Length: 62
Image 1 (cartoon, rainbow, N blue to C red):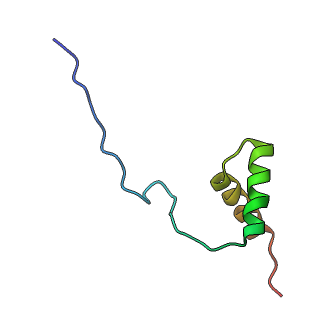
Image 2: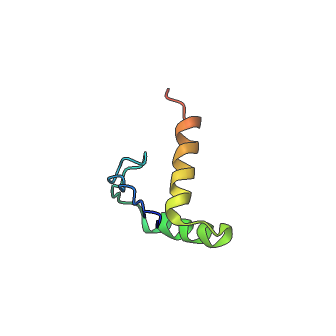
């Protein structure tokens, strides 16, 4: 008897703990992200996530 091919349901967008949205940033910031991306071999998206996580954990409201 052949084994069955089991195809799991794909989770809907946003159910993986991530959300997609757009932002407006300065061209200078984009260039800095591009440079950092090339130097680290990381995507802009990954870098933005890392930078936002760091900023949120290290910000202080006065």
